[in-house]
Length: 380
Image 1 (tube, rainbow, N blue to C red):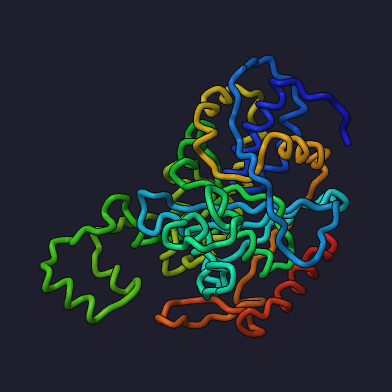
Image 2 (cartoon, rainbow, N blue to C red):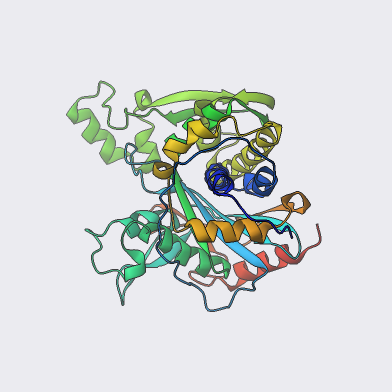
């Protein structure tokens, strides 16, 4: 492992790229060390104010010091319907002994018990955990770790540990509109689209409640006849059609966001396909960052960093992560996806909503934990 003293400039650059890479979701994180150890002539005195909230420990099994687990969350934001529901939940597990980064994709429809107060649990989709954690008005009796600015992230950390058996060190959450700004700052990303697909129901921002010319009587009749997304499909003006062809596609921020968030393609839709596309995009981000010769765009990104993310990382812990990584070029990347092809099964919730349960039964996560452990023990 490298031994060196970080200057103030290097620390700020390291922190900025730490957030850029985490926001870009995970694979880029491994490239952080390479960027840090490169000399930079840029000087800056701008400080980034980071949260000082300590990270609660979740999980009964003590985690070995050879690993660091970071939860990466993406959500739509307050301007979107259901804006604080997590669209993306990825657990990044870094094993410095094996020099391996594991990307564990957790489907948003997993049904799990969440702690609403000191004594009671509520069954909900895991993508609701962040929204519950940050809402101290609707849920005023939560434990202290599930309140305040980091309450949402801590709630998802709790749920993730129940599912995976892995304690989570830190979380970073970002809303997707900010990803557009970051990608546009870096420049267009070359993405290798694995499958051609068309999505006729990609939501148009700002049209979530558009009536599409229907009268109140017609809307009420549709509500009686349809529910869920079938009801939403009756309002075509709320959606646009997007298409992607297999092969290399150059994407700006807006296009990349559509590629990552699309869910309703008849041939390549659903959360599992979306998770696969997000992994593909991570690799493209990594290649883009490798192609950058210097920190020429850091100054453009700095002013926005503090408002881009919510995290329980602070400056000292970020420095520890930098030291912990060692040489990132030695790391291999392994994707682990939880799906109906391995440990999950489809079901319906109390209101008829689509949910995913462990095949071994509600709240029985042992098979899932064993699956993840086995995948992490495999030779690459």
